Image (cartoon, rainbow, N blue to C red):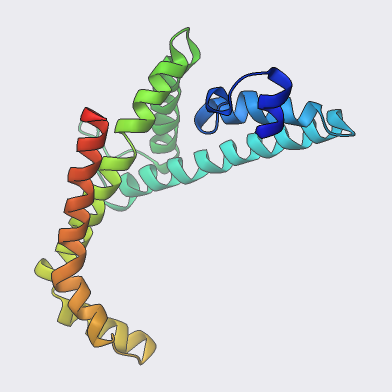
Length: 182
């Protein structure tokens, strides 16, 4: 990044160091400076393509698997697995069109900021609560012992009961504070 700032004669703070600018601006610019730039560029973008395809497999299987396993009715009917997958793919394509227009990078920044960090933290708090309070840590420990023959160390049980949920809630509050006020 320092080399790019020097060549462009701009301060390093103006060089994109994260997000889509890093992948679609900074890396390609750096690749053009390497020997065999065309080969490295092809390899880089093929890797990005495969990464995107792999992410789509995980999304489609995760969401459609939920519908299939729980026999969820849509429009009053339980659909075949192929139809669930088609529905997820079409919905994903419709949502993805937002990112292909003029304001796509702006929408991607907003989506990245508000649809990833906070929901993941809330999901983590929910999981900790479910496994420690609703399911109970004792049942979880017994199942782990049945499958592995090992027990949780005392500090893990203590952390799950008393430390992890408050720390995650504090992280959520800090994340909201940073997103709103900083």
